[in-house]
Amino acid sequence: MTQTATLSCMQTRPARSLISTLLAFGSLYNQRRALARLDDHALNDLGLTRHEALCEARRPVWDAPDNWHA
Image (cartoon, rainbow, N blue to C red; front, side, top):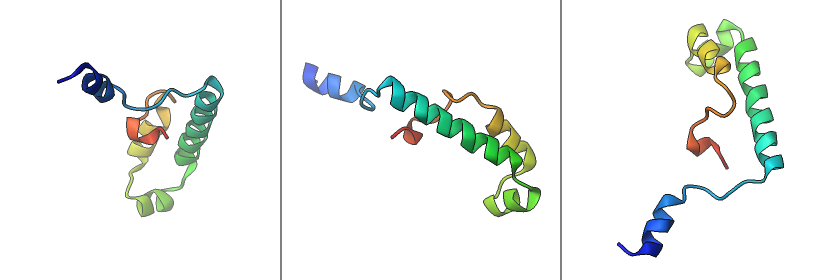
């Protein structure tokens, strides 16, 4: 494998500016808080239990899967 091919495999996503990162963290924080406030009927529509929703809501904003980052 060439050095160029190795480097391209290591890059998973482009670097983000500090402002865009903070905005993404703020958005994720708001989404997780909204998830925690949903009633049981809405959670059932999403296929989630109260426990699953609260576990997700308690995760820190930097703990998000790579595919969530644009």
